[in-house]
Image 1: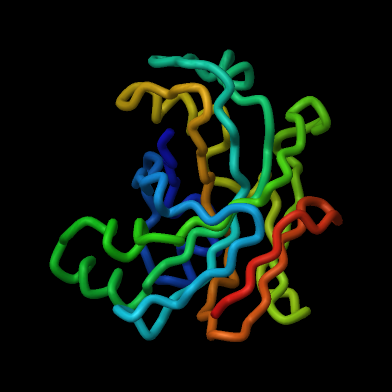
Image 2: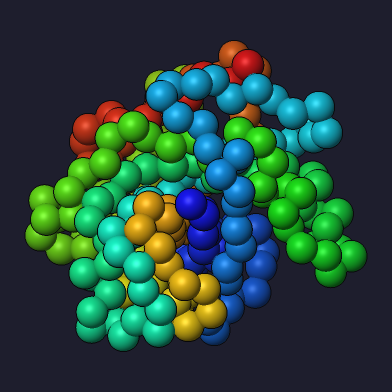
Length: 204
C-alpha cells in the first residue's frame, strides 16, 4: 500500500505559503509507516520545532489501474475520508532552499493520521462540492470545499496513473486548503466531513 499526496492544490493555501502556482499536480509519497490509525496519538518529533497540520480529503483506491482517462477516474475509488498531512515546516523550508525533496519533512513516522471512517463514494452527489473542516482545541482552523481544488479528483487520478500504477488499497491525499498552522503537545485536532466528526488526533 502506498500513500500518494498532492501538494499545492488550493490557491488560497499556495498564497499563504507564498509558493508558485503549479501547472500540473505536485506529487509526493508517504510510506505506510506514516499512517496513524484507530485513534492513535501523534507524538511530536524531536527533529522539528514547527510541525504544521494540513487536513485533506482522502480517496481510497478500489482497483488497479494505469493510464486512466479522466472520464473513467471515478470508477477507481470507492470511498472518501479525511487525513492529516503533518509537515515539519522548518525542515521543509531548509530542504526547499537547497532544492531537495520534501520527504524528511513529510514522510516521517506518524505523519499521516487517517480517519477510521470511510464514506462510500456513492453517498456524495457531487465530488466537486464536498465540505470539510479542521478544529484545533474546538476552534475552526481550516475550512475547505473540493470545488476549490485546482486539480479535481478525476484529473489527479489520471495524472498520477500516467507515472505510478494505482493499486487497490492505495490512499490518495488530495491537498489542503488555507489555514494551516503549528501544533503543540496537548492540542486536540478534530476533522469533520460535511458536519460529521470522523477524525480525532491528540498531540503528545
